[in-house]
Length: 499
Image (tube, rainbow, N blue to C red):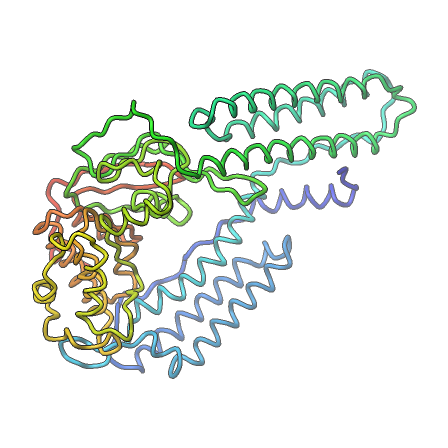
């Protein structure tokens, strides 16, 4: 639709302001301590921290709120929520950030957990605002459309410019279309026909406009027709893409030309993942190639939105790739149904999450037994009592989760993941909710599991220090593998300064 002079002026001003805007980040001082022993110190830390966060968010979002007034409301709500959190930390919310030292039995206040909680709330808003800033920065200064012409040559030039703009727009869209080679050949034909039909429609549409007498047409009406025409073409384009992605995300027919490479527990070849919201599609993983040998301790690093969670979901059997080859433990999961994926996970995959996920009405031993019973083959299950002794939790085997510290609960969740003797264990920020001391205890457990059982261990984390104890470090960014580093001499947990 054609913009009015007011809309045009506003868009030009938005682009100008956007070019001067800085992206937001967690750009404020982070406390150096992981925990403190008394509430007074904790009170001073959280008061100061929340004050810094609120000041930063109000200052940094002032300019962008001029462009999107709704952001001012969101920032105010965010700040009010932090103030409410501060007012209630000494009672209701305080329980979230307090634990008992499993050695001294003294109460501790988990500064790191509190900081991570506030940072997570902050990141949600920051991501939303940065996404808006990014879109603005991608916009080019809008080209003013002439509202009148004096000659036939001027009219022809306008139509040629509009036609070229539409053709260029769809060429850019076609750079990210889904891979037809993994679909039935009929879909390749559909795509080819769709492109040819669109090209013909553009020619025919502008051919009709060229025949009009420039002196009798109203350019504003011509622009409206062009914009409507482009919108209809784009709707047809996305309808086809959404249909293709819906099929690609279903189980694939396995091709016999893709041999198993037994040296790798994870073997991804040209893996792509698309998501669809029913209107458009997004390419989240882009032709990923990744080979992980058996028995490695792997750390995956990457910023939010980099694709690392999608990668983790695919290699752990939580989701299927849209195209490519995805061998995990010598099984090509891209051909598995949802039922087959569930069975595969039960028998081959162990999970350790940031939130421990223990059943509150079962004691420690019973929680671990739940994990063991997921393994159908009883001969493969680990001895529960031996596991409890290995993780130093045998004396607590009859306690409920509520009677344990955060670190103890995470150790139980680790034992639960090991109990069924899985081929691969995945950890999604497994130390994110722990203080420095408990982080070291849990990581030491990981190292011992990897060395003693030769179990492949794959951890996703934001903490780059953990990479120093891994044998393999994978960095993910923009849906691709940015780097893979082999660590022939990983450090011990004790050798690292954890802050």
